[in-house]
Image 1 (cartoon, rainbow, N blue to C red):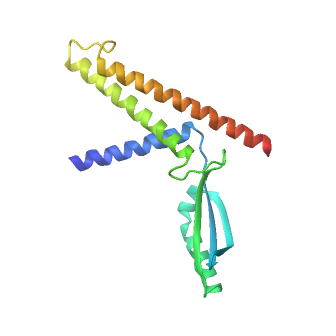
Image 2: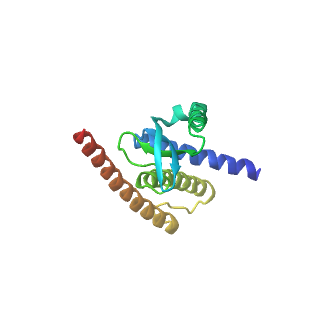
Image 3: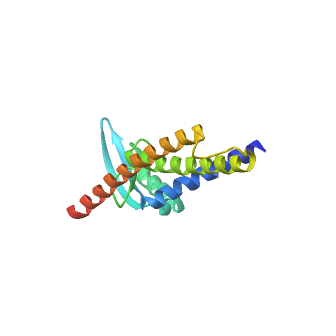
Length: 170
């Protein structure tokens, strides 16, 4: 039973992340560079810039291109370099990027709201003295959640300003 719950939790986390990406209107793209290197230099042989979904369905094309280029450059190591980004804002989606942190924060807010609602529902059914306006834990939790929401809203505003600035420069 524990394994099922943990898988269910994992799926819920994935749904929370997907919801956050949808709310932020993130367009997942990947830029793939196929390079070969010698010494401290590397040469880009071929570049793909495509939606991440297309890449995930057509990975074999990249492997085929790498194999073909390796045959053309047998004395050099041919390798791929991946850059995941949001097409709309141009911002990186690497794990430590600001945009990834914003997606994560929004997903955490969704999870926290769900847990808070479960806590309230549980206490309404099982504790006849429960008052959600005076419950210390709940009051502290709501204050912390509101601070987190404000921080997220500020980050979202900065993201939209960045998108607008990018549009105006093109």
